[in-house]
Amino acid sequence: MATASEFSIAIWPGSSSFTTGSTPFGLYDTDATFQLGAPIVSVELQDVNFYACLEEAVSEYSSLVNQQNIKDNMISIAGASTGSDMTHRLVTNTFNQMINIAADYGSEAGVGGNIEWRTGSIYVTESIQDYDLNVLVRDALHSGEQIEIKEVLHFTPPAIRRYFDPLMESTLGMQSMLGELGFGNMSPAIGGMGAGGTFMMMPIFADLLRLQAIELNDTVRKSGYGFHIINNKFKIFPIPTKDFRVYFRYIVKSDRANALRNAGTGTTLASDPSNAPFSFMTYSKINSVGKRWIWDYGLACAMGILGWIRSKYSTIPIPGGEVTLNGPDLINQSQTIKTRLLDQMKTDLESLSKEKQMERAKNESQYLNETIQRVPLKIYIGALIPFIFLIQNFI
Image 1: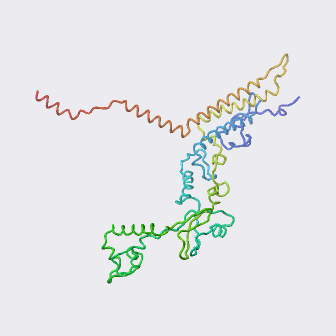
Image 2: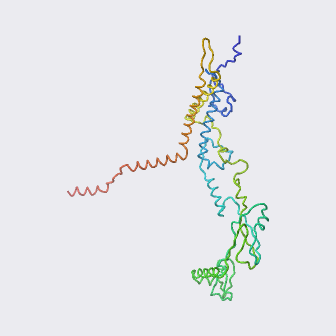
Image 3: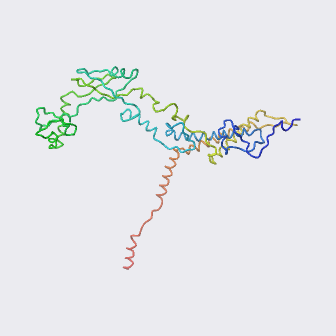
């Protein structure tokens, strides 16, 4: 006859028998609140089965809540460090992603952004208008790359540099007034007085009219300053009359095509839900509402395991008959309960999303305004009291 020691009957010591490693993945083994009590049960399950079900329930709850948080905050989470932990923490909205999007538009407009605008120049030779920037710039500075010219610094000289002063005693007629602006002694002196003194004696509208006359003269009687660029073939206008340099700004197209220019090194920045910095929740930090959901889901998981165990044999022979086990019923009940709990949880989380909360706040504000509008307004008659008093005395 077998002894009791050979059956290894578990005896409850009066306190929790939980030890590290009692769950399949050990996600919550260090949480004292997670630990259960006696290992003795009256069904075909052991304590490790219940711990596995409870671990599954906590993990499922954590996954659902974290998924909702990621959906609500992904635009703010993107770009954050993957080393941070946002679980159980309030995530603040940021403009990081919106500014990054705006920066790409700024790069094209030349008002900032993430793409470097480089500066280059070519040497223009007298009487030659056509130049191949692919040869002079691309192949010389960026072999194997493509460039795009963004700005050419080739403009008509400002009229202010060729200001015509009729009061100047000079045979040249066209003089510079940079001395008046404090940029240097560029104008001749008249009778010991600089040119600035002459300009100070003229009304400002005369200066403006003279500048307009110079600009109109250049437009009508001279070739306009300009250029054409087609496939980086550069044609300059007017025909150069001397040798000089033309400066321009350009980008390397591979810089624009680099979608990972803000990605950081390796995978240190959050980019999508797969690496958003949310981890499994701490069971002791979950409130009573969440724990009640976890208990119900854990019970449904245990029912499923028990159902599979009892489904191994549909009937068990006993003296004088047989017992039919309810394995299939337990499996069906387990699936039904878990489906109901998951649908309920998803519905509750969706109703608490930022979008729904803002809609609720908007409706609440509208209802409050409508309620206030129906409240009777007070009529203040304090100013009528002296008038009534006088009428009573007169009578």
